[in-house]
Amino acid sequence: MLGPVILAASRSDTMRRVVSAAPVTRPVVNRFIAGETVDGTTPVIQDMADSGLEVTMDVLGEDITDPAEALHARDAYLKLIEALAPLGLGARAEMSVKLSSFGQALRGGHDLALRNITTVVEAATEIGTTVTLDMEDHTTVDSTLAIHSTLRERFPETGAVVQSYLFRTEDDCRALAAAGSRVRLVKGAYKEPARVAHQDKGEVDKAYVRCLKTLMAGEGHPMIGTHDPRLIAIAQELAIRAGRTPDAYEFQMLYGIREAEQRRLAAEGHRVRVYIAYGTDWYGYFMRRLAERPANLAFFLRSLATR
Ligand code: FAD
Image 1 (cartoon, rainbow, N blue to C red):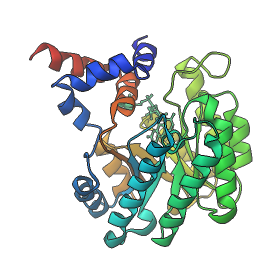
Image 2: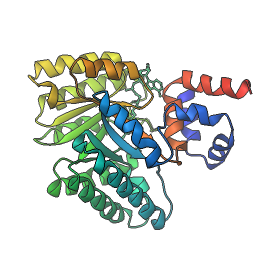
Image 3: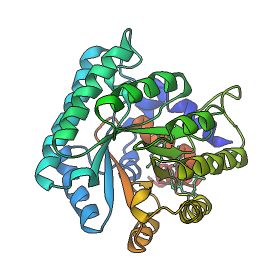
Image 4: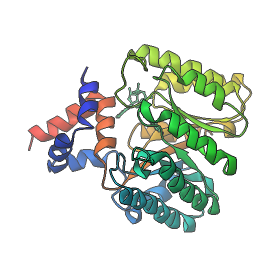
């Protein structure tokens, strides 16, 4: 019940000011955000790599309101790529990008976002790595998948994300399960209306399994973005049934969530990629993490009360 309320708050400027200014917010935020700067985050990436984990890097930012901010966001990714180059991790350290931070929602935003993301994908390719386009609310899906398709003409390894809570996603999975495609399947983190998305968690999970079957049976590289132990077990079973070797799919989890499970799967020989978010614009990302798990909110409120 609380989830939708928190998700609504995640898009409120007033709540953004209140939550960001609360002194106790920071320690809770730090659980999910690896750092504020690229230099502060590089040791975390190296530590993950040393533990046999791969990473996908998110420079925090979304829903920008003017084109200068879009260029700023693009440049932050270029700086990240410069910092990744000497680590020599290649595709073990890739990028995740929210196109709303590249101007997608502005007037002429589709083309602006395409220009900005193309520059980033070119730079990523030069250091031997890839980019995955995060998926945001349902109004952005057509534009994001169109940009993904355009990018794939020159950069076939560019990844897409699909959200099992959307009714359309089973069709999207069928279209995306083609040779060479990289597709991250997640449940979905935004507040969506009943006309476009399953509202019942059980239905979201069932849809996730149907999508997983399509992706595993297809010719692409499925990226299983979940912390849900039941879905992880089902994915393992489906991978065996599809005759996939461990390098032909990967698990993905968020920084700060189920870390022991991340390491356990990696130690068992699975590919595990950790989604690492860093930067100062953490509000929207943080609120979605609170919404996913009421226990996180309780922890946050308790720290407020004990001050
Ligand atoms: P849940 O049923 O929510 O959780 C299963 C278990 O995982 C919980 O019982 C709990 O133990 C643990 N857990 C889950 N969330 C939390 C949390 N916040 N704090 C603590 N424990 C938790 N969504 C999008 O809409 N677009 C994207 O582009 C996107 N990219 C993602 C990339 C990755 C790598 C991952 C892992 C998720 C991404 N998501 C994205 C978020 C996703 O849609 C879900 O909201 C999120 O993963 C929670 O769902 P779950 O599958 O883990 O299952």
